[in-house]
Length: 95
Ligand SMILES: [Zn+2]
Ligand SMILES: [Zn+2]
Image 1 (tube, protein in one colour):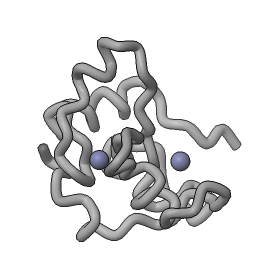
Image 2 (image 1 turned 180 degrees about the horizontal axis):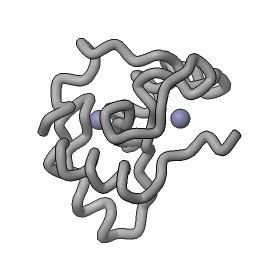
Image 3 (image 1 turned 180 degrees about the vertical axis):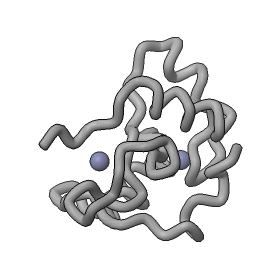
Image 4 (image 1 turned 45 degrees about the vertical axis):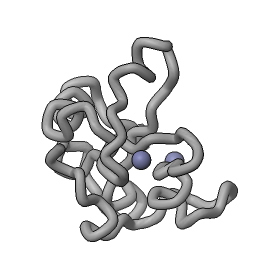
């Protein structure tokens, strides 16, 4: 299984979040311009049946100190699988 979001879903999520991190609201545009990678995550992991549409797609920062990718996407553990994300952890889901 190809467990990745396609371009259109990612851009839709980016627009919906108004280029902010869904977890902490950090403006992410400048990081893109610096060529850094952002983390695109499923809200419901693909393994648990999450789909590849924009509504299951969330963009998180991976910049200290917030590092929402690690904190929210992986429950704070470097080595863990992506976890199911609770909506209450995504206050900036719509920008
Ligand atoms: Zn963040
Ligand atoms: Zn991840």
